[in-house]
Length: 296
Image (tube, rainbow, N blue to C red; front, side, top):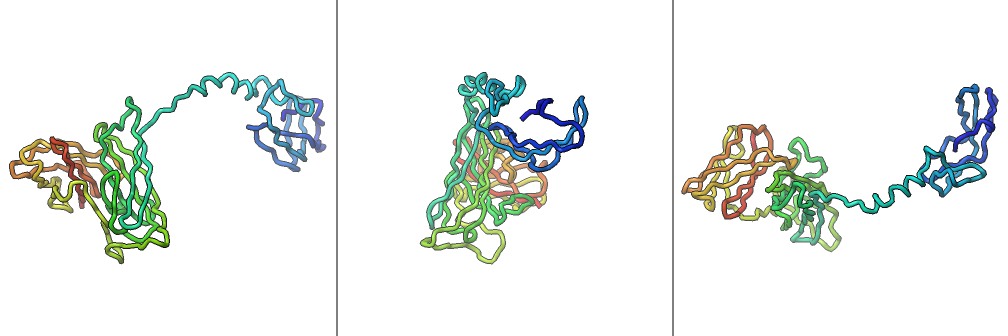
């Protein structure tokens, strides 16, 4: 509420106001606390003893307790009227996004529910989906383990009894962009038995199912050198595409790799620092193979 000069008693004598109010989008004031201020006529002290929230937007044409509820410059009612058609016609842009859901006991299913972006935006299919897990929900400094790949991940056992956290990374092979989502795996119903692998600690890959089985071998891995050798029989005699992403889902390398008739190729990793990466190899006939790379 704005104050009129005739309402103000100048000087340091406290002037109590008992019928103050604020509009729907306004904010309340401190009550029973002296407010000392001044204007061109001098200094004054005001104490507000009440403050009512009225169900009106600021509007100089609407009065409350004999006072206008707005001014020419504070007129939210007019703002809403003038922009109503523009707001009603708003068409939100759909970007690439992913949400995670879970179902079942054993086998246990994690589902990446991917929403494709508008056709003019980056992030078009096809996608590579990578799953990581840990116990904290903070996926940094290599504090995680690989869980598996694919939009639908079925686990035959848990890395540990829930709750635990997973990070789902969706990578667009068309535009080389990625989005991710961290999800807390909920406790299982009492009717479900919790089956785990490798109890007692360490890095565990529970129920890991690569989309194409074990058709790709990487060596040496872990590696301290700048190159990895790849062995993939399905890639024999082809020029195949290798994409490497980091654990944040960022593209760090994309290269064409020639494979010998024996299915041997070389992945150059000269620009990669120490850490864990994920390799997606795609052959000319669109067969996909995945492996984890470790650089020491």
